[in-house]
Amino acid sequence: MSGKDELTVMLWYGLFFLAIVVMMKACAVNREVVDPGTGFETVQVSDERAEEILKQVNLIRIYAEPESASMTGFDVNEEGSIAIGFRRTNDKAIGIYDSEGIFRYGYRFQTSGAFRLELDQEDLILYLVRGDFMIRINPEGDVELVADILDTRENNTYANYLDAMRKKTVGDRKYVMRKNLGILNGFAFSYSQLVMIGADGEETIIYDVSLQNGIKTVLILTVILLMVGYWLKVELPKRLAEEDEVPVRKEGSVKE
Image 1 (cartoon, rainbow, N blue to C red):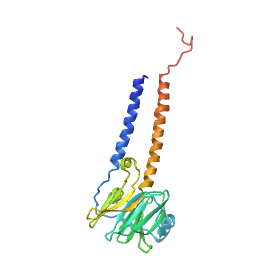
Image 2 (image 1 turned 120 degrees about the vertical axis):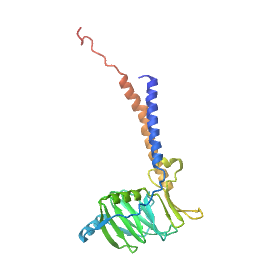
Image 3 (image 1 turned 135 degrees about the vertical axis):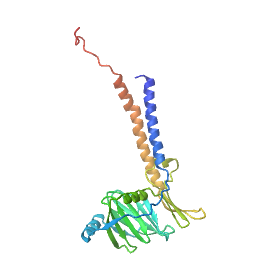
Image 4 (image 1 turned 90 degrees about the vertical axis):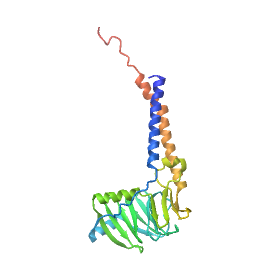
């Protein structure tokens, strides 16, 4: 393969990488989703099943704010109380904050899957995706209900709404999840800030892990670029050279 052809191949790989970046940026845009106006349709489980679920989840009430972690989602009730979900490996957490963003209490629990959350007045509702069940917890930390989430089209619509919600307006206040990494927003895999915007436009940062997420994003990008650079510099020329090799026939191996 000629040098021109090699340059063309490398150009195509560069365009492919650029296309991935553009798609990531498109996915990173905050979406204003519409509340479908319904909750999940559920069926209460038996006491034995509820005890089994709670033992498996190992729900623990905490009074110290969870260590800095990426956010999975949030919700705000009419009184301005805020619930924020935090992403971890298996040990997940939810923090409950007052209207000024002061931590009040929270919960730790175990699940290897994703989770969703809502505030119904002062009650926290935890939805576990793996197993499709919900746990309702009152402000005192008592579990009031454990129920299965039914597999219906309406429930799927509501689940998609909760997953996509990054903005919510309560009264004259607007709450927004942001990545807040500047030019790195398109590469960020999680959100860094929850910001409250008042009626006068003044912003109050409720939660902020921009520094931690920025460092993590830079490290991930560095590893990816090093891998791509190694492949273009070493592996691609090696493969192109192999394609240019012509097998040499042994003299006298072909009879005329």
